Amino acid sequence: MLYRPSLRSIWTLLILAAICCGLYFWCESSRVQRKMPNYDQKLAASQLMVRCLQSLQETTREKGVFSENYEEPLLDVLIGQQFSLITTDIAKYETKLIGANPNFAAVAVELLERAGVKKGDLVAVALTGSNPGLNTAVLCACDVLGAKPVTITALGASWWGATDPEFTWADMEGLLVRQGILHSQPIAASMGGIDDAAIGLSQMGQEMMRLAAERNGLTFIHESNLPADMARWHRLFMDAAKGNKYKAYVNVGDGVASLGHPENASLISDGLHRRLPVQNYPARGVVHRFSAEGIPIVNIDNVVALSREYGLGQARIPLPPAGQGDVFIADRYDLRVAGLSAFIALILIVLLVHYDARLFRLREAGVDPDTLM
Image (cartoon, rainbow, N blue to C red):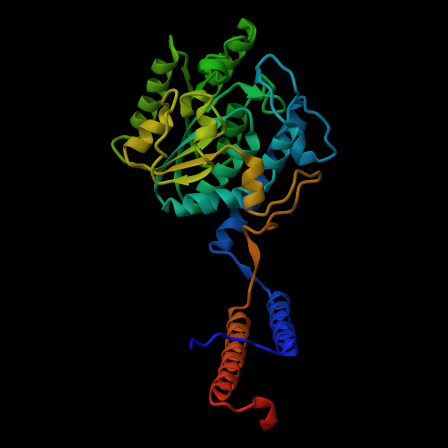
């Protein structure tokens, strides 16, 4: 006859359940805050981004550059008007607020560090006029890691991006580089928008973007079609490397020249890719060329999802201070308490089963266990 545990006493089970619940709550209440890896570099990147925003804000005030009033001085320059001569697409206001969070620079540090980027490494960066906050975060992360970012930007901007034709993202980056705050190497700019040619914008808007590239000393990319445009992006990146290999390629936003097709924004997830996932891509962009060369890809597009993943919180005004979020410090279980709790629970279960098995053997021998009590 096989032994089947009976655990005949309901009180035994209730006591065991109560003890296990107590152990569980002990584990939950003993959580400790632990600094995440690369804490110092992440904090430095976030603080550097705050410095960048302060510099941009001071410059716009001194030069009389038009900006909206969002009751947060650091936001006034990063979040532009909804409509302008260089507005290329619609967007959500929330994404601009989240992208302006200085702690996104820490997320960029995390992703670049996981890609293996170290001091002196070349990093190709495709930037966007649609979210200057994210651009700044990535460049601050590169600066803190000691990497050398080579950048090409799409000048057109979606709603609430860098939509001022007189103060585009190229102007912002150029200003920060000239001031010695950032050390990126901007080499070229395209118009962005549909087919990376700002199709649908007025000739005046397109001309203003050409002038923005010219005044910042950038090569203006404006080819006859999108494939030729993407080839020019890639060739300019390669020429700037001067025979050296890039350690990573960073895509910021959903620029069509970088991604290859608008649909690819939903096919390439955010974060680090050692190799891009095998997909039936409608078209292949600069990001695919770099991936084919074995270069890790860092994709930063869906800021809402990334903010949730790294515990940066929701969009908010005023901006959160540097150093806030799970990317810096996160709650973790105390492994000593968890291990001890698991050991106690295991011992109790073993003793209970052993006791129940002993009673079973007594019954098999014809002894009433109750007579032994």
